[in-house]
Amino acid sequence: MKNVGVWMDKEKAWIVVLNDEEVEMTVLESDVEDFNAVGGSRSKTRWGPQDVVQDRKYTEREKHQMKRYFENLAGELKEAGQLALFGPADTNKKFNNYLLEHQKDLASRVRGVEKADSMSENQVKALVREFFDNAS
Image (cartoon, rainbow, N blue to C red):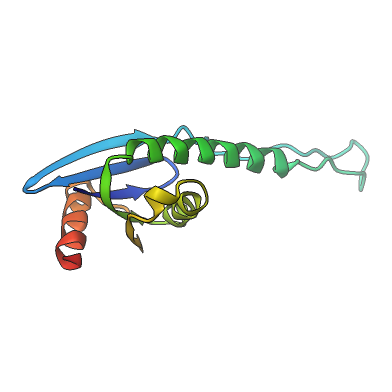
């Protein structure tokens, strides 16, 4: 059984696979766009009406991109024995909720969902190794 730790945010997921003493790390890019809604305009007359930017289309697009990201990540984790999810924001919690809703088999292997700041690759590897050493 492989122990797998995933450090993730909206941009990428670092997948760390522990096989006895061997550590493998792969990166999965998310393709989630960073939206910055711009626009809206004023009329030429003073105190005139304003155009409003429709944020709903941006948030809807982001939601679909996140779902695709989670599907790809779940596909990469099919062979995992035990899972640990880390991340600086709520992306790891959202991924755990996605697993509970859509991938119940994979969700049953999640051993922890924890906050972790942005880290270097070596720090992520050490975090995952430490998590599973303490869990044993």
